[in-house]
Length: 449
Image (cartoon, rainbow, N blue to C red; front, top):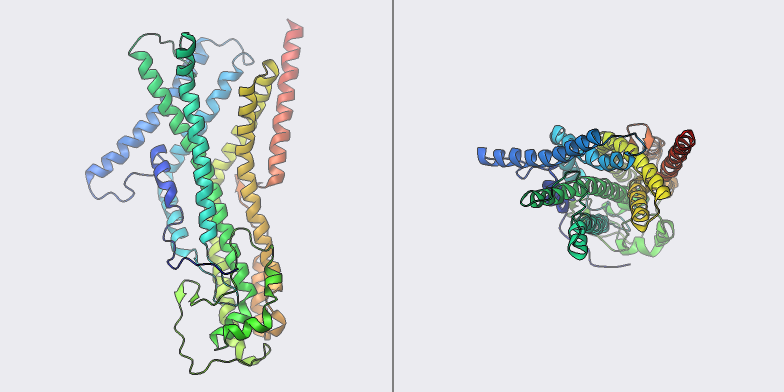
C-alpha cells in the first residue's frame, strides 16, 4: 500500500474550472479588479453573454408567436427553449450571487484539510482531487464535442447536399452577411449553453467528490484516534504496527475516493510535527491512562473536521439548491417532450438526446448519493476507533460526534428534494407519466378532428 505521497498541500481544489466558468460568464475574468479597465472588461463580457442568450430566447419567442397553431404542434420548439432559459438562469444566478460563490470557493480552499491526522494509517486528498479533475476533463470534452456537432452539423449538411442551411436558430435568413452572423451567433449561443449547464454539473460533481474526500479523511482519523494519541505520546510507529496491523481489515472498502497508507507520516493534518522525545516507547499497553488526554485532543480535532465538512455542505447546498430545482424541472419536461418526439418520428438523434439528458440527470443524483453513502460510514469508523480503550471523557466526546452525524448528509434540490438515486428513478417515472398524458391528449385531439 506504500506509494509516494504529494508533499505540498493543494492550494486550490477547483482551479481547473476557472477558465470554462469565465467563458460561460459565471466567473469574472478579474475576480479582484485593480483598475477601471478590468471592471469594464468584466461588465462588457458578462453583458455580451447575456445579450447572446437573451437574443436567442427572444428570437425563439417571436418565431413561436408568428407561427403558433397549437401547443402540440409547437412542442418541439418549446422544448428547445428549455436549455436556453436554464442557461440564462444559471448565468444570471451566478452574477447575482457572485459574492456567495467566491466565498464558497474560498471556504473550500482555506478550510478543507489535505492530510488526515497522524496515525497508524494516513491519507491525503490527492486521489479525490485527481478524481474531480478527471471527471471535469471527460465531461467538459463531451460537452464541447456535443456543442461543436450541434453548431457545425447544419453547415456540413449544407455543403454535402447543397440545400439551404437548416439552423436550430429560428430566423429566416438566406443572404450574406446575415447568414454568417446567424451562424456565429448560433455557435456562441451553443458554447454558452453547453458550458453554463455542463460546468454547473461539473461543479456539483467535483464538490461532491471533494466532500466525500473530506469524509474519507474524517473516517481515517476517527479509526486512528487512539493511535494518534499514542504516537503523540512517544510510541514508535513500528511498535504500533506490529501489534495493530489489523486496522487494515477495518479500512477495507471503507473509503470512497482516497486510500490509506500503512506508513509513518510527519504531518498531523496539515501541520508538520516537531518531535523532541529523548526516548521512543517500544513497549506499551493501549489501555494505559497516560494516553487519555492526547486521545481527547485527537477527538476534538476530528470534531472540528466534522464541523467543517457539515458547514461546507450547508453552504454548498444553500448555493446550488435553487439551480438544482430548476434543473430537475427542466430535465423532467425535456425528457417528456423527447419521448413524445420519438413517438412521432423515431430516429437515432432523438434516442441520443434521450440518453444524454438521462445521463446528465444521473450524474447529479449519483454524486449526491455518494455523499450520503460516505457520511453514513462515519458512525462505523467511530465504532472501530478502539473506543473501549478510552476513558469516560473521551467516550462522551466520541458519542457527541456520533450524535452530530445521526442525520443523513443530503444535498437537496429546492431544499426539499434529495439528490440521490431514488430521485433519479422518480424523475424518469414522472417524465414517462407526462409523456403518456401528451400521447393521450394528442389521440383525443385526432379523434375529435
